[in-house]
Image (cartoon, rainbow, N blue to C red; front, side, top):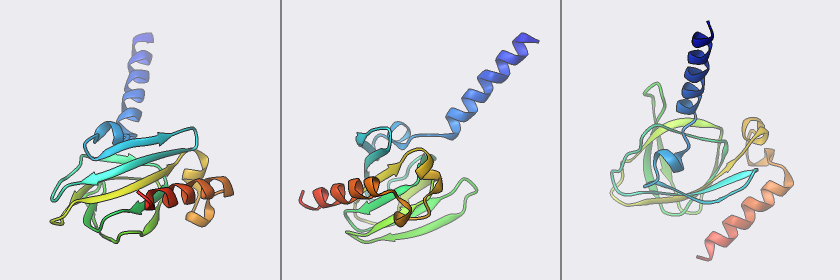
Amino acid sequence: MMKLFVVMVIAGVTLRAAHAQDPTKVEPSHYHLDFENDRVQVVSVHYGPHEKSAMHDHPGGVVVVITAGHLQFIDPNGKVHEVFAKPGEARWFPPFRHRVENVGDTPYNAVYVGIKGKLSREAAGPGGLDEETRRMVAGFVAGSAGR
């Protein structure tokens, strides 16, 4: 009976780890960790023309587009969501799991500020962020614009 319990615990941990796949670990050629603490994860995003990713997860957060892009997000059920990103645009995304394909002929670059913990699951949009997190995001965006 104890062996069965141990096998079930190991299977549960493995399934949980497989479900939550950090893009900086699953796709290091497309996602680079710039900064992380207990509240946020700031990730640089880069896809060359026609590059694809493996399935991965993002916490809820804000993406700030650096260069224009024509992307396809494919969810775990195979549904395709087409995205046309414009430089300087900022969008809120709830926590999500997907694959990405840059269907454009130019590289795509962005910064993803993932919100950790309770805020990631509860915030409905950038207005749902607390004041400190809103200032952190605004400061990062302002600093990135001068690079």
